Image (cartoon, rainbow, N blue to C red; front, side, top):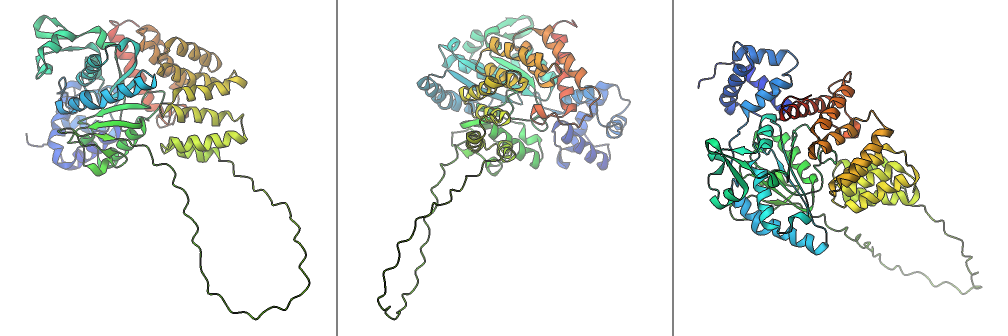
Length: 498
């Protein structure tokens, strides 16, 4: 198609899309962008593409419904099970078996995997099926399989779990027979047992904060983020890679697509060669090197005249040396390390601080988060409990402990801790969000919708750009969108029930 919109409008719309949903269209892709804009304009009832674009650029930006339509028309929904087979080969033959063996040896039967930009769910369900084949004792494991996307329509289709023939190209028929139920019209529904392994959630890799306990995007063993970074501009892609790296535990794995960027973009990680697959690994930082030995300066020996003998010198009196007190690490410095993803250093500094100020609740809670983001959940829970041992009314400690308990697979304990947190801080947006997510994961859709409504009510009157400090820097506008999307999607899943 020939472009009809002027270049200045296309450039401005590209900037608006990049800022709002993270989709970047350089000039050589403006034809594709205009095609998607045209489809979105028709869907939303605008008289023309030009009228739609002018409205989106002058009315404060597209609203939530319009952004959903734009995301649906501008992103590629074409995917299928076990796409890029060499990547799944690397996972199934090396990466996951090694992780499983390591966790068995440790006696810690847990795995955490994130399918970022999961589209309509085929990738996430492929991971679930692969894990099922690798874990004969899967019931004994705590498995987190998070699947996120910026397109709510894709997420609804993913949660439905119904697929046509196009999604199965290249799939072993035995696999399809084992994990799917045939439906009329050549459609197939994923097994409920496999579907329960996956949690689908809205997440924007450009704007939303991560890693974060609240979004369950921390301490991942494996992240698949394929065919999405290519949609970002250079700065956005680099920032996303840094955040994804921070979301991995030490020795964790990131699998992008070969088209997502050149190796320098993945500099925080180390490339690991696998035939036909693009794989990076987060190697732990090197141990602190010993300080270099002091360099001795040699001076020439001067010939001095002999000193005549005299009375013996008096013995020197030993004076007590002044003991220098070690500096106590400042909390702001520790927060800076945490914000940079330097969790190991943050742990060292916070523990040094707590040696001098053992009742510093803020330091203990930051230490708990630092441990949790490294996957050390027992240590994280210990420091949350340390706060509660002397301050039972710390809503933040109860909330953080709930996030850790949920990550450890103890939903009942997490629910109890969240109830305590909400009793102590009934207007806590972070706790309502945690309770909504827990209720949704447990299938309590009505309770989840209630908490999402509470969130939207608590956010009213706040400026969209306002930062929510208890949610790792998420903005009011972003959380309002997340809550509204989830509330609407749950209502549709319940057949319109309120």
